[in-house]
Length: 111
Length: 122
Image 1 (cartoon, rainbow over the protein chains, first blue to last red):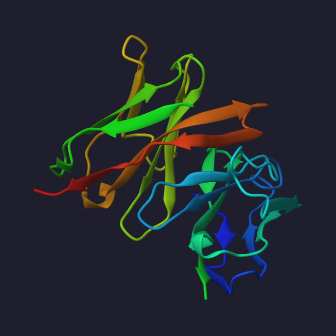
Image 2: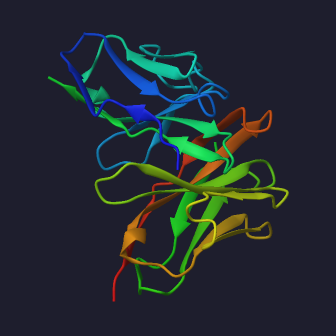
């Protein structure tokens, strides 16, 4: 089963910019749009970015997404304490056994 | 805004079938796709599959032989059945409304339920 690869952790102090990367392949990120989900401690995941770079209503502008080739990135500008959470990228995978794949997850810590 | 609530037994015995229901409020079940996702303790997210308003289904290849999803339009609910469970199926199970277009070019879960914990144990 395909997986999207993320670095396990990232950290920054309040106000800093933090970037999370997501590496995939030609059958997933290279072919379809990327989404990002935020999971606060003890809570359900929440859609943070969809279609590579679109923010749902209510998501602060400090969250931004981008995609290039078979990789994607999530940037958090002006890091805040409430941003401490797990972040997952995801995309549809068009391989022989098509399915939706999540990234391995990145834990963001606010120092 | 659509809201989702999972329900079902919190404890299932090994080899039995796990059955969960997701009740949709604030929207029609005929309007979207509907997905199930799970998260084992301390682990990441795993997509289980989806069912569309047209009763089209698509399941994770790793679970396909054990998964069945259905929709009850009269109750605005959709359901998950996972057969022959083992301890590896212990997880928090989430239901989510799903947007899909362009085949699966655009595919994402926009609203999630709070999740329900299912433990597989005798």
